[in-house]
Image (cartoon, rainbow over all chains, first blue to last red):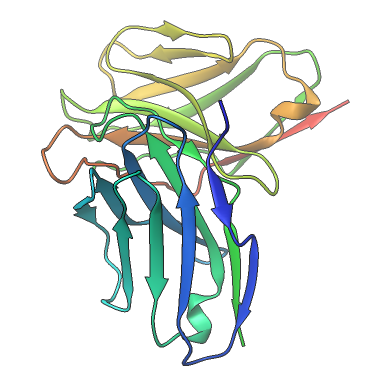
Length: 114
Length: 114
């Protein structure tokens, strides 16, 4: 079974621009979660989608949004980019949405904002 | 979310057992204990999880104290590939807050010497 894939792997954007990141979960997985990883804050939960519905959201500003499609693929959008948005963005998929389900992470998208 | 405390770093020699401790003195009776690890330049990887009883899988063992205020991840024979940051995470079954969310701390950096 193919793992979680994320595109693009690397991205450079300018402050003020917007960006869309994509995540394809493992086949059959219906839950997709997004995380931001920075050296200062570590790994932080952004949001989770299950069956096209956002079920949980972390403490991030409204500039961060996402969606999930009927095939479980997910996209994350960041508008009006700030320098502090430079980070590794990780996507994780799981079969279900509850706490007993293990999450499988992709390799991440490295976003640099200049 | 209940907090976990892990040592910042630990070292081991190859082929020796490694015991990675985690303190979670404020754990509630229904919190699950999960362990993930993150190898260099990769997304986190699920290792093991448990509730009350000790657990074993092909990667590791999880020993949970009787009072559940601490747990230990055991790697029976460390290899160079086990060098990673290990995260001990509590997951609470509160509907809504638990959906798809892993709360990562700073973790333990494990160095394995040849």
